[in-house]
Structures are given as structure tokens and as C-alpha cells.
Image (cartoon, rainbow, N blue to C red):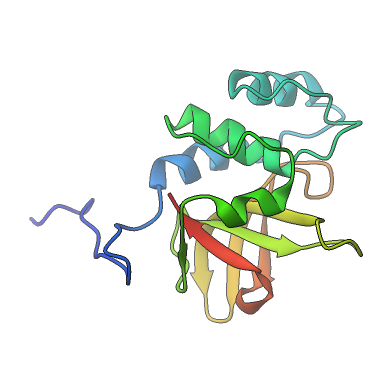
Length: 150
């Protein structure tokens, strides 16, 4: 049979997003700031992000740590919107892409995570610091400020 790992190029000629990053992120679902804090800190530290998730917003740290564990460079920054300058923009998100959402009242504030799947008008993202945990959450696809592929 044909190789199932092959992917069609997008408008930039890039293959789909990084499925290894989504797999790594998916394995972290459930890690949280309370009863899983030590495991969460280990996950972040293994990815080069040494911080206390109870005192520092960590969604960008989660994405950076996951990318490092997948063998890719992130932004190295703790701001979600830093990922708007990472990789290349894509108009149609695919699994493994990074999505950036607005959050809060300040223009620098945001939330970021990995696209897990798209269903209809919703994008399901795996992100850190979603209710103080790593979770898979659905968002309206058009609510994202941008999708990026590295």
C-alpha cells in the first residue's frame, strides 16, 4: 500500500504540520499545576523551559518544550504571540501546526498550542496552561490570530 506518512504540500509547498510534536504534546495531556506539578516541571525542563508553572504563564513554554523534544527550535520566549513570527504562516491549519489565539485585554497577551485536528468550523488544539493543565480544547477556527508551520 501507499505510504501513509506522505503529505500533500500546502500553498507554500511545505508538508503538513509536525505530527511528532502533536504526539509528544498529546502524551502530556493531563499534566497540571497541582497534583502533577513535578511531572509538568520535568516536562518543561526537559524541553529547556525552567520555570514554576504556578507563578508563570506557561502555554508558550509548553510549545517551546514540546518543539525541543521533537527536535525543533521554538521561539525561546514565554509570550504566546511570539509564535506569530515562528515558521511560516498557513491559511488552512493541519495537525502539528501552531495556532495563536488572543487572550486578555492587552495586545501582547495570547494563548498558543498545537493543532490536533480540525472539525468543521472548530480547531482542536493541545495546549499548556489551559485551566492550569495540558488539555485538548476546541476553538472556533477563525478566532486564531494565525497558524504557523515550521
